[in-house]
Image (cartoon, rainbow, N blue to C red; front, side):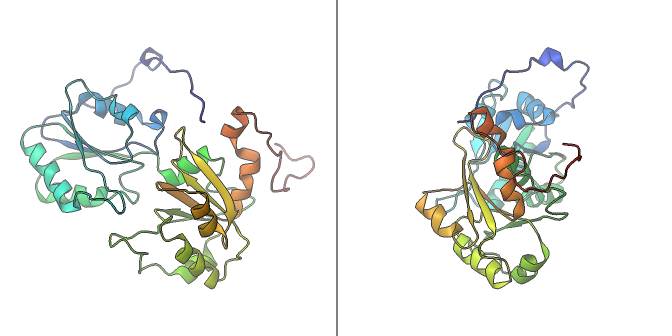
Length: 289
């Protein structure tokens, strides 16, 4: 269970000048990985002004509760294996609402430009002459892992990281990825929407040269009170995730940064878990902590 934090009154943030949401505009905003506290000030400002909020499945009720009283809420979420709105229909709906003179907030989990199809929606707006603004959000591949105590980079483990999706628009593993090159070239791999095809993906990475015993973490419902973290290995990750009953939304991270969770699980520490001072064993005598 993720402990709650004290709220910060708006009066503690004086002097801010946030933009006015004009009629006929669409704002494409990221809501972060789930915790409402990870909303940006621009996203909170958009919620306070929007006439219509077109939101995704990963936007929770606490975040929608920040909407302006009287704002219309329209669900446009996509979930694997379930009936979902078509992307062209969602994009067309944004155009229709804007032409009605409404202030339209397109609210997406994470960041709209990181595997969020925000670019497709923005291009539709451009084609139809609709003015828009982009509000970046905290992407789950960084913020979600941070809530699990796993940094995307660490100077003693990696100077590069690869972000990829394990689920193409077809519902299959993306064909255009060079899995062998990724396996050889990226010390840390962070995967979105990979849980369904995890066995196949892990097999391709092992075929490409990754150690079957390499550490892997699967993080589900990241940053929410229901967050779960499975620490496993590349060879065992698919079977153990299935045995644990893990369900999307999930992030999968492959690489040595997973070992740092023993030292950096700050949520676990709040709940009483003892942390290992240096899980990597890399701190040298006399080096600053």
